[in-house]
Image (cartoon, rainbow, N blue to C red; front, side, top):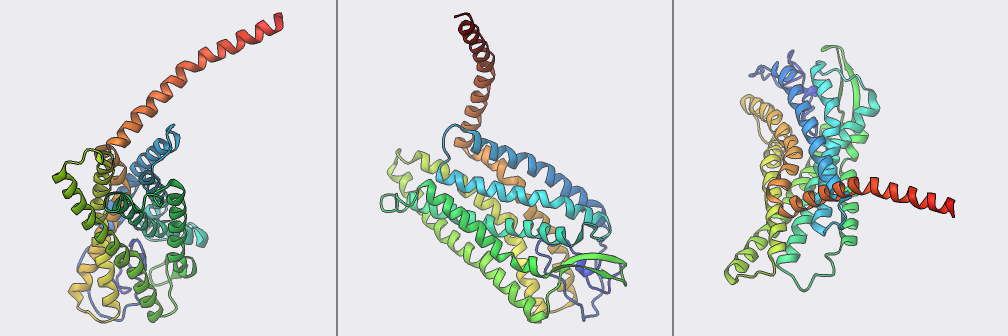
Length: 353
């Protein structure tokens, strides 16, 4: 997609980061028909929005209203659900943007805020997974030596730091997101307006390192050690660690889903940076990356719906909490009329006395 394209200008791509706003100086023709953007993508986005809001609100309700306090792993997963909820809440604005022919009708403030919400989710989610991986690593590999660090207050502090770090990585969105009128396409586009190509490559390189390479390296190290520890426990038949293994199985499932949904997007983003740095080239490669960028972006969005489903399917402790919460609500409903009647009776006796 190029700025010479009449079907879909480059600044209107619906990529998650929106960093592919290259002012095109090539003569590459469009090899794909982009009309499907205006029809299929808004519908898909709205489906993801409805399912994501329902499922993640349900997860947060279970974690917040259950009578027992959340474990360290559940604190991390609850924050992941909150981050996913922020993302899917921002997507309807993007659906309107796409269906409106890439004319941004919501003004500069929402242009910055909506994209900020999407990016904070992207960065915070992977670092919540880092925290979950480190917690499982400590629980299974260093069971005795790091027990004090696996406390809810430290988990909450870690989550607060990760929210702050995700917000820090999203600063370029607040600074460089702009709404600009392009007379050649007759649209007001919400896009990243970097001051120069060098600044664009610098910020993109920093984001790739801190939002992909470093967290994936930490997660990979912890996962290898965790799987090794689980094999040893299976051989020695440790029964005392069944609770830890259940939590670890859920973590591994969530991690696998995250990798399947997000790694293709990060790989394509990296290739796009190399393309803009002129370390790679070719019209066919550019067109392939454009179409992959669209597909893998919405695959990444789907992760926000997939996580709550995994909690129910894989998380036995989560299902147990759901059942206990429903029982708790039923008891409250049945107890409320009786308690009100008893309070009325005691009030009547007091007046009689």
